[in-house]
Length: 256
Ligand SMILES: C[S@@+](CC[C@H](N)C(=O)[O-])C[C@H]1O[C@@H](n2cnc3c(N)ncnc32)[C@H](O)[C@@H]1O
Image (cartoon, rainbow, N blue to C red; front, top):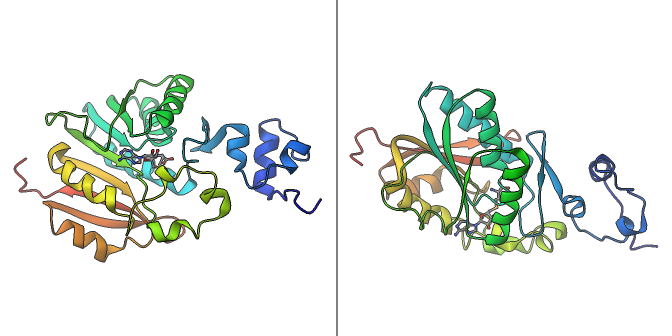
C-alpha cells in the first residue's frame, strides 16, 4: 500500500484527459514514470504530441521559443525562409512553428534533425499526425548538411544540464527521460559551443538562432562564447524570470 503512487492534480488531469483511470492498479503501481510516457502523449502549445521514452517530454518553458521565432519572422513579411530545429526530439518545436506559420500563410522550408534515430521515428509520427511539410534528417548537430546549407532561423533545445547536476534531478526525470537529451557535459555547454562554430557557416547573414540554455548560462558565459565568434547575442529569461534562451545573430559587418 505504502508504495502506491500519489498523483498530483496535473498528473490526474493528464490521465483523465486521455481516458486512463488514475486509480487503476496499473497507474497506482507505476512508480515515478512520467504520466506522459504512460499515455504516450504530451501537451505542447495546446497540441498533443506523441512521445516515447526515447524523447524528452517537451516542457512548457520551451513554448516561448516558438513565440520568439514568430516575432522574428513577422518582420520578414512575404519572404520564403528556411529553418532547422536541431535536437528535435518529438519534433514539438519545429512542428509547432510550422503549424503556426501555416495559420499565418507564411511559406517556409523546414528541417527537423536529431542524432537519435529513435527520437526521429517519433518526430516522424508527429509530422504525419499534424500533416506538416518538414524534412527529417539524422544529424550530429549540423554535420550532415553541406556547407552551402544556410538557415534564416536556427532553433535548438540541445541537452544543456551540467553533468554534475544530473544526479540531483527528480527521479522521474533522471530515471526515465533519455540522458542523451539532458546531459550537456561539464558546464552544460558542450554541444552549444560546437554549434556556434557550425553557425558561422550555416546561419544566414540576417538570420537568427534561438538556443535554449540552462539557468546557469548567464550573460557572462554567453560573452565568453561570443568573444570567440563573429556573433552578437543576448540572454532572454523565461516567464518565471530564469535565464532560458540565448538569442544570436551575425554582426552586421560579417562577410559570410
Ligand atoms: C533537451 S532534448 C530537446 C527535445 C525537443 N527539442 C524538445 O524541446 O522537447 C535534446 C535533444 O537533442 C538530441 N541530441 C543530443 N545530442 C545531439 C547532437 N549531438 N546532435 C543533434 N541532436 C542531439 C537528443 O537526442 C534530444 O532529442
